[in-house]
Amino acid sequence: MSVENHKIAYLKRTLRTIFGLFLFACGSYCVIRANVGLGPWEAFHMGVSYHIPLSYGDISVLTAFVIMIFVYFLKEPIGIGTVLNTIMIGKFVDLLLYLDILPQMQTFISGVGLLLVGQFIVAMGSYFYISNGLGCGPRDSLMTALSKRLPKAPIGVIRGIIEGSAVVVGFLLGAKIGLGTIISMFGISFIIQLVFGFLKFDVKKVRHENAVESFRKMKKEDRKSVV
Image (cartoon, rainbow, N blue to C red; front, top):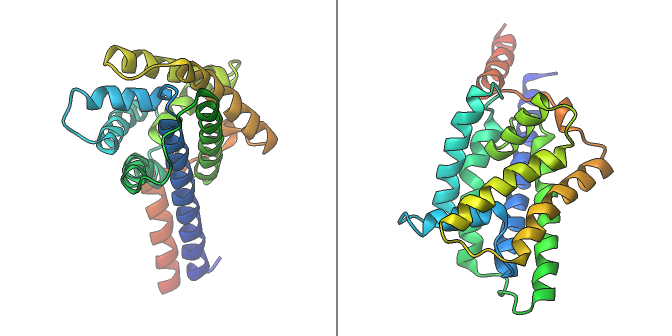
């Protein structure tokens, strides 16, 4: 592959990753607007924001950095996609909240409908950026790391345990927990397993590049072009 084509390929992978992150943020925004109880991570971030003078997005970024450190010790690669995920999802959600595109749902039925749509969008966003191999986001890296250590456990069960832990902490910090939270906690596990299964996507088979590896590959191609 020529240097130019190599760089174009990396650019396409990066743009695909950013697109996936934006989809993920859109899904999270839908869950917030559903107004039937915050989703697991939404509850965690909101709960923390009640005690720290930071925006929802800033709490999301801070949480992602803390999880990223933990994931590093689990020997999951910290890639370009991991860093982009850490920063972008929270800020994308802040932007969507600021633009106030969707009205807050006023009935339980419409709220559950929007919540499920949001979870489907989250699952699709996860597929787009995880399948790129540029590094999972911190939360998904944690899911992937645990799935490798528990190979017999379905990916949905592992995701459910992680989401459940986030709900408990969010509730203890004062976040709004409702029936929609329970639906969200179990629904995201089922929907991710359903979407990944339909797309025949196995997160355990994706080899992720860490950021150093990606930059080395690009520099290697540059050196080849000079020679």
